Image (cartoon, rainbow, N blue to C red; front, side, top):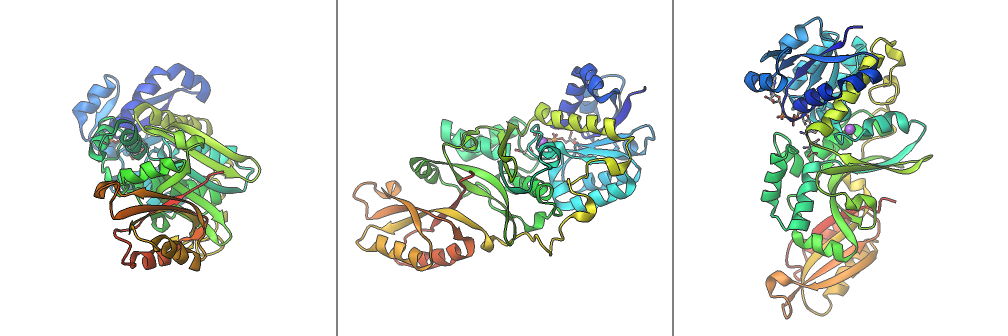
Length: 444
Ligand SMILES: NC(=O)C1=CN([C@@H]2O[C@H](COP(=O)(O)OP(=O)(O)OC[C@H]3O[C@@H](n4cnc5c(N)ncnc54)[C@H](O)[C@@H]3O)[C@@H](O)[C@H]2O)C=CC1
Ligand SMILES: N[C@@H](CC=O)C(=O)O
Ligand code: NA
């Protein structure tokens, strides 16, 4: 049988990895897929670089639409990125009856509903394993391996760039900007790295996982997002003294009233495996009612790890493209007509409704009665204290200073209630600087 023909749109970090791995492991991949898989056409704005990357025998063009228009191409891989031209090309490829493979989480988190609906109507597949946690087969695990479960929660380190930055800052004492530059040089960061450091990329990924885990539409606009740019080295140090590591987590939980969907720095107990995930590595913890807690770990960014996921999708499509579309695995794991209405049973909850525990740091005047006032206000709002540290304020004189840091770990509380008490605490004349609040996840 002739190889299935693939057109590649964008041959940058991930695209070149796909081309190289497919060439290197061609024979084994063919034995698995039952048929050869050949990239016969590549489009990239930088035609010269693309030609150098693929060598002879592949048609290289600058116009991506020429790939879509080629009737011999069965599968289009979109590796350009972003919501702009990439969206147009994916929609045009679907309309032309091509299957699509993409690593573009931004596109799917924002426009996934429209894209999956168009693909289902046309009877083609849109595969996106590379879009979440790079090379880790988390989409496959959530969509197929855990299909027996009522999934209760998932949480993950799903942005390699920020985990790399936090590790470099902690282990090598690098400053934030130097660590970010290294992440960019290593090909981990997004074209616009603010997507990484402000938590947007992680929010794209947790939005996609949440849809698959709970059978809800992709709703990026409802995600709560906070990145790592405001994290202070001091809090990383205090968290360690309390037995925690700080990680940027994407969290989604099923609770009585709906679904929590959030990205923010989180304290995680240092003894958890996920607390020890370092550098650009990713890890996702998924808790299902039958299976219990499961952990998926691996490289979440970089050329060949991400290519590994793209090629797995190519193999799936090669095996399944002649099957009756109704017999394929649904894009979001649940049959399209059975997704929970976003306004109905399983709404994504506003952040005020989220219940979790907290790390609070208050810079206060070192005077009698201040601690009692702070804990008294917390108690009035029904927030109970789990642990507390008091430390000299090193940056304003250390020992003998008239200021001190109070570090408080709370038990579970409603975010809205915590906001109210923080506003009251902040207004006290003895609270001398903006209060730091970091959420805490036990993940057990
Ligand atoms: N780099 C990584 O580790 C990972 C990236 N991703 C996603 O994979 C996608 C690609 O990322 P990278 O390879 O890192 O990006 P990249 O910037 O290295 O590559 C993009 C390529 O697309 C080309 N391009 C741009 N506009 C084009 C157009 N209109 N027509 C044809 N070619 C065009 C560029 O010249 C470039 O070669 C993005 O959606 C990204 O979010 C997903 C997982 C990991
Ligand atoms: N910029 C992303 C790349 C993979 O999705 C990251 O750092 O994880
Ligand atoms: Na993946």
